[in-house]
Every structure is written in C-alpha cells, then in structure tokens.
Length: 212
Image 1 (cartoon, one colour):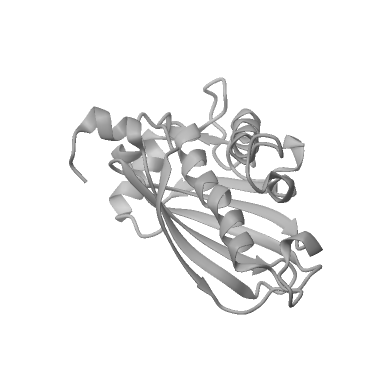
Image 2 (cartoon, rainbow, N blue to C red):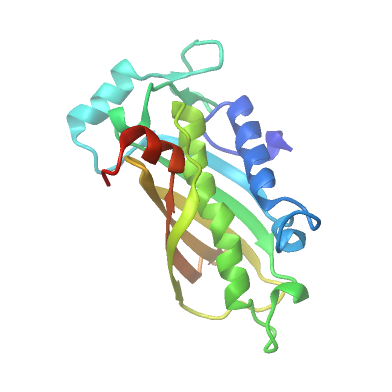
C-alpha cells in the first residue's frame, strides 16, 4: 500500500515508483526469480539536494526549486512533497530508496545463509529503484540495462533475518548511471552486502551521441 511508503515525494510518485519496481520484478511466468523478488516491499523514497553540493546550489534548490505538491502548491517543511526540476543534470539532486524483505529458505544456500546470487538478484531492482525515483521526480528516464555490478559480501545472512536494502543514486548524468546499494540488518543495521550498480540508458545514448 502506497500509504505505508515513507519519504518526501508525493503519494502519486510513490505509487509510480512502487509500480515500476513491481514491473521490473515481473512474475514467475515472465521473469527469473520473481517468486523471490515479489517479497520485496518498498518502504521509503526520498529525493533531496546532494549533501556535498556547494552551498549556493543548495540555496538555489530551496529558492528556485521548491518542494511542491502535485497541484503546484508549496509543501516546504511538510511531510509529503516532490521536487520540481526540469532535468536531473540541471541541479544536484540525490534519491534514496529503502526496500525490505525477510530471508526465506528458498533464498538460502546449502549452509542456510543467503545465497550470493540471490543477494545480487535482490540488489539489481532495488539499486535501480533509486535511479527510477529520481527520474520520476525530475522527468528523466532513470531506467537502463545493467553494465556492471561490483559487489562485496561482508558477512553471511542467516535464514529468517529481516533486511533493509538501501539504495542511493551516485551518477545520473549522461547515459551511464550508477547507484550504491547496501543490504543491512533491519534491527541492528549490520552491513551484510554492498555494491555499486551501473546501468546504460540506451535512449540517452541515442539522443546524446557516444559521449560518456
């Protein structure tokens, strides 16, 4: 339910982010691993000025790109909002999403811990969800096809563990986009797996030429 999704974007945009996540996961008849992926629940979506952006740019976001609701009314300082911006590359914005899932037996290896391949499968749509969220807010296509996923396993995840999968946009300009993804314990915040996922936006490549 979209009402359960926290974050500072509008309810309409949260619903679209949720629908796009479900679209990329698919179902057991159309997509690999969908019976696992359907267990993912989007719980939070935020879009905000990059914390390391120059102060002048942050002030510009506050004054010229106010947080607006779906009808154009200001929602500055309120709980639900959306950032109105013509293009993601015209202002330094960042998106962050949180998905949750509980590790089940079908997700584990012979040792009863989360299978490495399953971890990467989960991080694929979750990491892209941050890029998609930024695109939903700014009107830019945040989708693409995977180019690389650099992944590190920090410690095993046992069956029954409740997880938060936290994704943050890293690069969104050009046709190569990337996001950072972390699988953490929902209760202790312990880090289990981390990755940087890069995707290629074919539409942007055709529109902008061969430049990286």
